[in-house]
Image (cartoon, rainbow, N blue to C red; front, side):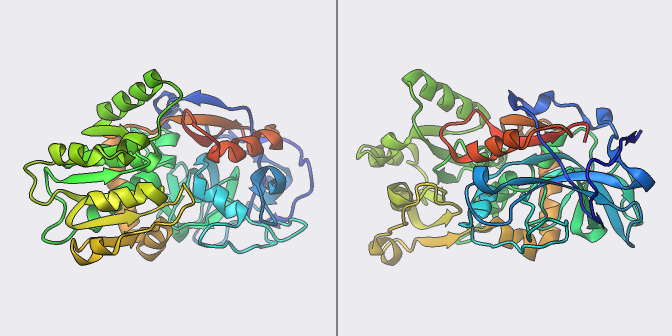
Length: 411
């Protein structure tokens, strides 16, 4: 039932909303309430206007310096084929932080549509929303939807969007974190494992792939999908503060389906070449696919580890070092080097995104794909801006116990 409360500030009568956030705590996604227990609650003002809050920025910089919390109102009269949405969960991905910093490959369009003092952008490319009301035939009240394309602006309590700008997901058997984190990391891993090896055939059962950043969201997804499809994997991680913590991480990834796990130091050591040969003995093609999100020496070692005709896909550069490749790999081993950008794939082929999301969520429901560890950041109507900014700023800092994710409550 809608909660009535007086308007706190007179917002514009446009189609968007304002929000705020709360304290964070670490939680497993599986502990969140399933779809059947989600409450339909949203703030209403006079004449049925929905109050909303959004994180916004009007200039590039560090999140702690440029993020603001903006409040506005959404008209109860929906345009044709539109949906009024209430946010359930929205992750904080590194690409979101890079967008705020102005270092990401795609620059957003600044707009005054929300009634901000300066043209602004709502960050956030990923999340799940519940439909509060709909003027479209294909989407009904209570449905769950995710953005169809990037730069949707998910860090807000409510949104008004065209119905064709979202993808409906079947919510049965899912919780908000599972639905809200499916579109970026799992989809990236899925497409890189499936789309880049062709000659002499696509990746087959028993084939090897090698990846750095194996403890990342993409890395964990690649381990699990690879295991399901019969691939064997060599996974590189950063060593933790103690040998015990490092071994615990290795064991965790092996439990997910990793064949072998090594630290960055072990990977870069001279002895690794012999170890790799021992692991892949009997495979005529060696390592067929390498996934690189680090760059620098780590990427170079992946390239050198590939078999003849192998492919290295770069999708990130966490070390902020260039990928330097020996010419001999191109000439004598016919190694291929390509890049993957999720935004390009998702925006060019939304139908493929919809199919990939559906397949991964089916695996989640079947218990074959585990949730990524998360650090839950509750966002209620009274959550302070500083809490939200701290959660965003901390995304790129040091070892984290899980992905930061805004979970919306009583907004």
